[in-house]
Amino acid sequence: MKNINVKFCHSKSNRRSQKSLGSAVVAGFAFSMISSSSSAQSVDLSQWSPEYVKSIAGTAEFDTAGDCARIVPLDYAGKLSVWWTGPTDASPDIERKFNEEFWAAWQQTYPNIETDAQNINYNELLDKFRTALLGNAAPMVVRLQILGGVEFAVKDYLQPLKPEDVGYSSQDFWPGALKSVTYQGETYGIPTNNETMGFIYNAKIFEDAGLDPSHPPETWEDVVAYSRQIHDKLGIAGYGLVAKQNAGNTPFRFMPMVWANGGGALDEQTDSPSYETVNINSPGTKKALQEAYDMYVRDQSVPVSALTNTQNENQAPFIAGQLGMMIAHPSEYAKMVDLAGKATGQDKEIADSVVENMRYGLIPKGTDRRAVVFGGSNIHIVKNEYVDGELDEQAAKALVCFWNSPEWSTKLAWTGSNPGNLQGFKTSWMKERLDTIKFLDVTTSMLPSGIPFPVVVEAPEIMNIIVPDMLQNALTGKMTVDEAVDDAAQKIDSLMSGL
Image (tube, rainbow, N blue to C red; front, side, top):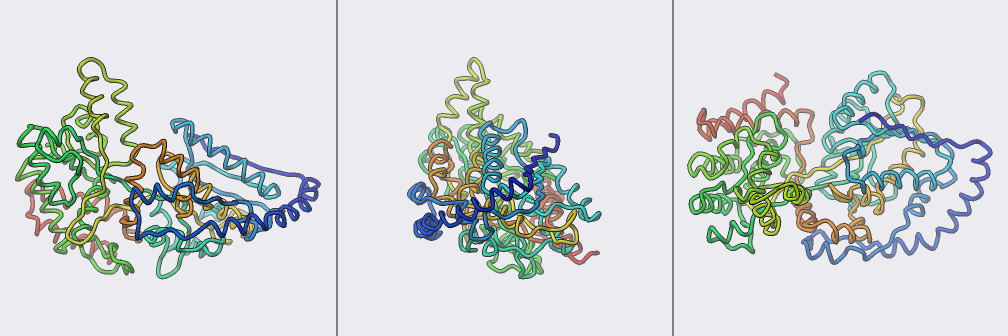
């Protein structure tokens, strides 16, 4: 998709006429600001469950303009540039609708901030941002995928930025999300949206295999056992193991097994990680790798093509009733409905049955915890010396406040994610999402169990190369489980040491 420039420009006379209006609006918001604050009680993460998520949705109202006016006056006049990855032509209509409404609301709320907003393709954003930084021509604000910021924080390109700087509390953001924007004790960004996946299974396959169709596996040991039982009784694959090399799908589905059993690549699963200790050869990682080995080699209960599969390759056998369980996003249900709609004849009957019997559950527990990869995006402010022109910090903070509001962090995450600001879960928009997006409540229930990949520059190579290679070495018999984790540990240690 081509870059989209959205420019909002206003004449000086327009700005002067708006200034007195803006001051009046600020005063007029006083009462609503008070009511907004009083209704915004803290969200209790200790109660997080599908039932709790539903119970708090639609229980509070928020005044975005009023909240942001406390940070930057609504009549502030300035200039702003921002890059982000937004909707494409292939995105659902509702995503494009909310994107247009967001920029219109931003323009209405801060009419005197001249804004240059560029929607840049996901695969191009990082490279374009790197180039712009080297030429001191970067935007003032940039929103990057959850691990995109660490590279730039390490190189001191980003300005310190925490929720309190734009009127919010750090307690209103997921602990796992804040870990992803914390480097050497400094917070350099704010989470705009976050997502986790769920465990999907076919209830009819469970029933036919003699398993309880109302209960997904509670532990990863259950997954191994259920997968074997499905395969032995029905002759189909039980679990959709993914082990493709150099593919992000692989660590997104294997690392939850590792963390659940107390392992890790480094120490990213701890509350205060230092990212200085290599844990890939820990007992927890060995247990997870042994479980994958047992399913692939010992029981042969997963697809033979698992070594070259991504999640996309699990979709066809699942809709055909030939796969019992897999991990995916809530959007997987919509994908199955779409596939069923395109099927014909007997395939159509089978596909419709699969959709009818499709269920979502929590990612299974291990010996230590329940865990899932924590995904999403973060918004950052670039340091003045690297910006094209001069950083307008007030304009930048106004946008960050607006974007991270309970209202817009919810609307802009409508189909594929969740609000980064926990207060967004209490909005009427969240209630509407829960009512219209099937199984969303289950996947949102996994958010407190989310763990971000290590916040180090080397994370992509560790997760996308070393971890899949470790899986391949064990599953192909090239190495034993012990040898495979030791080999991975040596590679990570060499990588982190710069050797």
